[in-house]
Image (cartoon, rainbow, N blue to C red; front, side):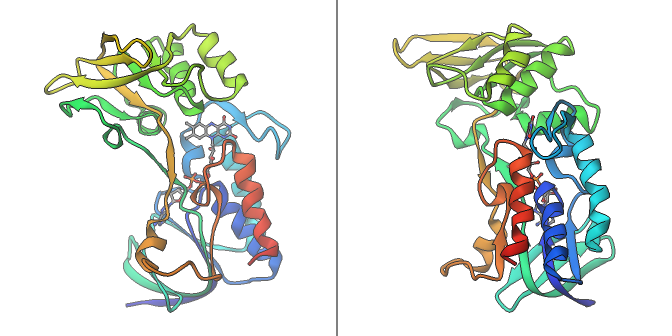
Length: 298
Ligand SMILES: Cc1cc2nc3c(=O)[nH]c(=O)nc-3n(C[C@H](O)[C@H](O)[C@H](O)COP(=O)(O)OP(=O)(O)OC[C@H]3O[C@@H](n4cnc5c(N)ncnc54)[C@H](O)[C@@H]3O)c2cc1C
């Protein structure tokens, strides 16, 4: 098996991983590796065709794709080796890692490890929802990727569970493309997300929001046919017919590699989680600053 040696191994090439590479270079490290399982650097930014990125860091209103492209050009300064299409399968306490790419599996030894693996979206299966598990149910992030990256449609009659920023972005994009967004379901007494997004997505497209309510049952056998929605105050239930249910019900930092490597003990100081894998940030500017801050911590 091939074996490589680096000063810093960065796992994930989203906004956090790219900023971490710059920070490592500025700190004086020379041998830096970014391992990214996708074909391109950028992470979730690459599926965001809407604006709202970089308002803090660049003082410009960029799309996610533009933000990623702009940051990628800064990366030359880092001199990092970039292995795309490469997954880190495991990290080990002896400061080595197993990676898998087009050429097969290989080993990397390193002094420091930056975990920039982002976060995972909670799925409907994490909720107490009765009924079957037919086709037509997915997270908003998955829908966004299918539509914006793969050029596919996800459905025509959509219900969205959750009203945070990600749900609002998808509701607005779907409505703008002529898809019928039947309703967004929210358990709180007001919609979530930032005001800017509420104005430009919910209000601009007049998306109905059903407050103080939760989805209690999924109806349908092969494909979803509707959902039962319960009002938390009255207990009354309403059936909403739909062919697709999208969920935007929260995200969890993806620290699986750490949990596998250190199941019982704490995380040693040579592993640094950063970006959404550390905690879920609202905007990308915070993720970038988090990565750049490693200059003093690595
Ligand atoms: C729908 C949506 C809308 C958003 N809208 C806005 C907005 O309007 N304005 C704004 O500022 N922010 C917005 N954000 C937030 C912002 O995009 C993210 O917070 C930020 O891009 C996250 O960066 P990250 O690097 O932490 O994670 P990610 O972008 O998720 O990057 C993690 C990377 O790690 C890779 N990876 C994971 N595990 C491995 C492994 N084992 N081996 C190799 N690679 C691995 C993944 O492939 C991924 O590329 C939005 C996010 C979403 C989802």
